[in-house]
Image (cartoon, rainbow, N blue to C red; front, side, top):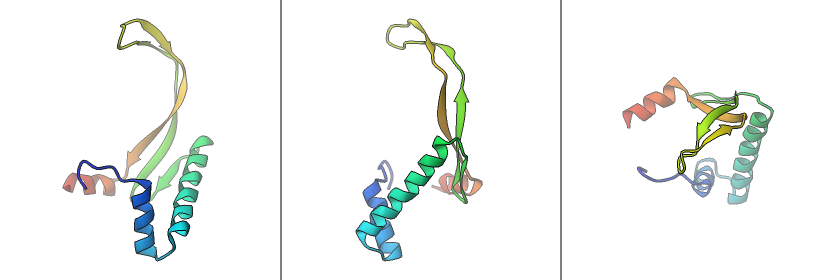
Amino acid sequence: MSNQTLTRAEVTDAIVREVGVTRQESSDLLDRTLDMIGSALEHEDEVKLSRFGNFVVRSKSAREGRNPKTGEEAVIAPRRVVTFRPSPMLKARVDKG
């Protein structure tokens, strides 16, 4: 699967094959899972997926930046960002590949 993107449709198809539910049920299950993760992150909760990794919301303060096209200085507004820290197991799997 090198140099390809794993799509929502491919994940849905994999759930259908592995679990044996209908395509609609599989799609609903994936949508609900992603909604739960998104909702938790919205409320600044940490999302821990065992053997995969952690999603964490970080607050970044305002800072000086530069427009890469013009070189003009600008203030970058404070914002919240999502970061991902892979588990040691995921790191080991990636390192093998």
